[in-house]
Image 1 (cartoon, rainbow, N blue to C red):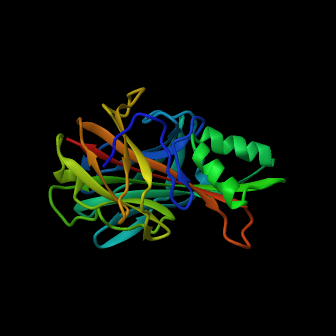
Image 2: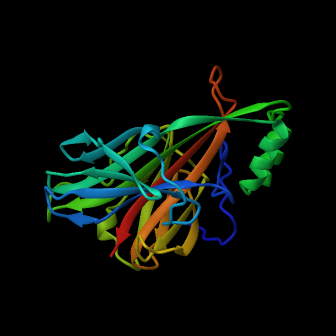
Image 3: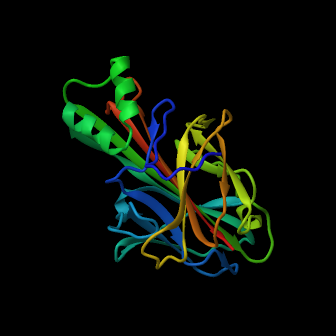
Length: 273
């Protein structure tokens, strides 16, 4: 595991980064522990500074919102805008861990080749720009870029029940804990695997940070992590509070797609006690 303070960059089949002008999408629950049958409210927050939100994703942009537990899953249908956040609400009935997940419909952005080059630079990845130039795959005319976002958070319903922390949601880009976050207190190390299209993403970098509460205006203890050959990384838990890991992955689009380049965002939020 490597920790840095420079801007986040991934160099694998594409690049991962937390760009200067980016807007990550997080799911942050009103409570990480609640009783069975109690309403769970989760805020979808969008900004470049965890855990703040600059604007709300509207319900029509949500492709899927689910509550996943050991013995099944339910669609979350109560979606609404609440100030600068998207509000999701549901009442979990089954005791045990639950994953709340939401995915945002892909959007297309058209831009010039020069604008796309600037985009790569703003992502903090001049190495990627140079590599794509060497490969001769950078566009010379207009570019169509597609982007989509995938968010997960983990909560505990009731006192006991089965664990689902390592359940794979099938997102194109996804963080999967390899050990139970509820059993990882301050001072411990939590291991993750980063998946891209279902496969471990080797030698990829991700970014993590903590906040004291959902009302915090800035994150603390920001660290960067790097996956090994098996797509795994270790994260030292330096403080209590709300933690997140996040990443952005950019790759050439598959042949026949509506876009030339695909951008995948992923986040995972949990509590360290």
